Image (cartoon, rainbow, N blue to C red; front, side, top):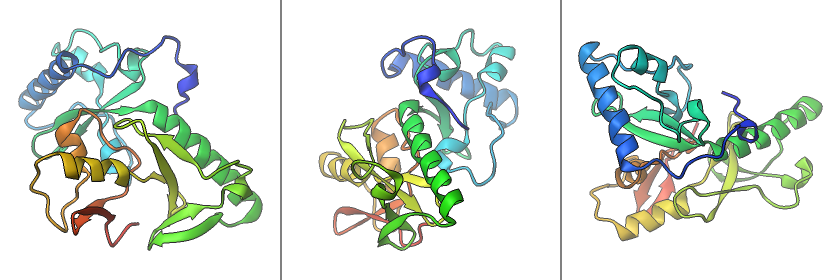
Length: 224
């Protein structure tokens, strides 16, 4: 989904509050019960990353009467947030993605695709782990390695590229903080990205899977 945040007509409200999230969560739960387990989501390609895949279809929620209005923070109502569902097979939890991140990721992917078209290869620089690479920013005429502002901490997070040429965000800084500051039961081999959604309303968009090793967040061994 190509989203240009700069085209939004009205300024976004703050991060969706508990009342907004609870209202949408209640509507999703009622819809799921009425529809025998089906969810009010838009159809996305099978390969869509898990935290971006199950975008809420507000039209369906309004048609069924479970929601009277779309939250002002939602993209569909001029806000900066895409409402999504995580853990669709079980809890079907409502979370949000900060679409200002999407805008920056899309801008970088556009630059990468133009470069690939002209040069027939992706401007990888160094391999961090198999399937995760830094970007040769100079070849893209960038002044510095690309970063994005974390929706969790406000810190700058590196943007990398995976083996398919897609841009990914490295959330290890945030994950390390959450691992240190929260009680959790995550173990080596677990996907610890859910620690971020356990503790906040935000889903880590464009993230590769991570696990925990010696108390630190690390990339999963098999990043696509």
